[in-house]
Length: 155
Ligand code: SF4
Image (cartoon, rainbow, N blue to C red; front, side, top):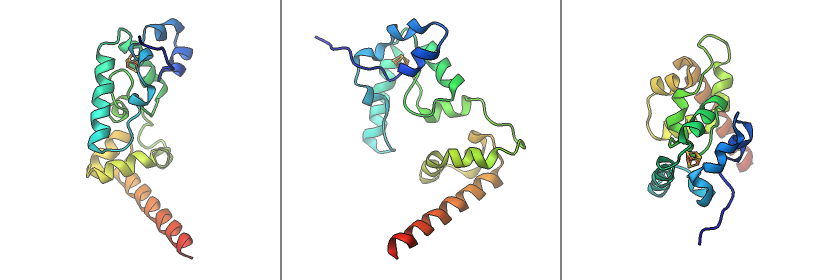
């Protein structure tokens, strides 16, 4: 017997025009943790694949993905896509709007993950919709902050 547990899309169901679409979500009977793989280990990547398999048989995948893109939801597998796969599709701050560095600061964890994965600066900038120089500046700031933190811990 399956037990219904909380959805990873509870917020989505609350904000969509038809709040009942969440009632058809395939993930109602899945462990919500499945949809939030952490890191880039083999286990995390396999977890994401399993979550996406659930989404692929979900009758409201389209609604879920639309919600995720409209709200810019940053975390988890939603609508059959990981957060990284959704990111380029989310409406981004136009270049030159002055919000580039702010956007990078908000996306700190993501940028650092992409750098660890060896994704070129050019691609990171494209994903965020900002100039390469802005990403470089943000990375320098992150490194400075990390160094400062290490110094404080050592003192
Ligand atoms: S697409 Fe995936 S995350 Fe979204 S409601 Fe369906 S099963 Fe849940």
